[in-house]
Amino acid sequence: MNLTNKFKHYKLLILLPLVVISACTGVRFTFSGVNIDPRIKTFSIEPYVNEAGDGPATMAFQFTDDFTQYVLRNTSLLPAEQGQKGDIEFSGAITGYRVTPVSPGGGETQQTQQQRLTITVKTNFINNYDDEKSFEQGFSFFYDFSGNQTVQSVETEAIDVIFEQIIYDTFQKALADW
Image (cartoon, rainbow, N blue to C red; front, side, top):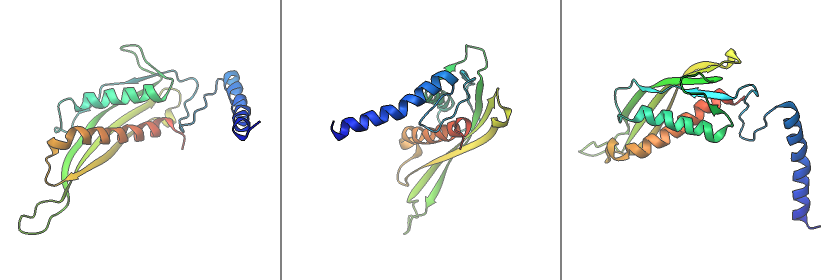
């Protein structure tokens, strides 16, 4: 038996007991750091709202949709029935959307070399099985871009990058036992 086949057999010997234990106890094992109570089967995400007053009109809808898709891709949880609350609940608002100069330019024009778009999202998380894990917290991230670009020219990419990180941070805070 060559070394590759031996390694495959060792992996099976290690993983098989985990699968058996998981099936017998109802404990979910994940390799992403997520630890979801086996009683939790459903989630709900109330539509986020834009309280920032700036940004694209569809920004809050995009955040809600991206967050829902992220939970569906990274867990075995199901969305709660329409109009029902899930075993875990998310709701919140985009509370900040601002563009600030990062590094001033030199010379006569004093054009900014870099600008930063920062978005803040406040999330209220409710765990209906363990209230100690519930929280309300703001999550923020940024995207830097060249000072000779307008925020509108980078906005789509910037929002995608920022939301990806905020969703990851929110998900980890809610569902990972670190």
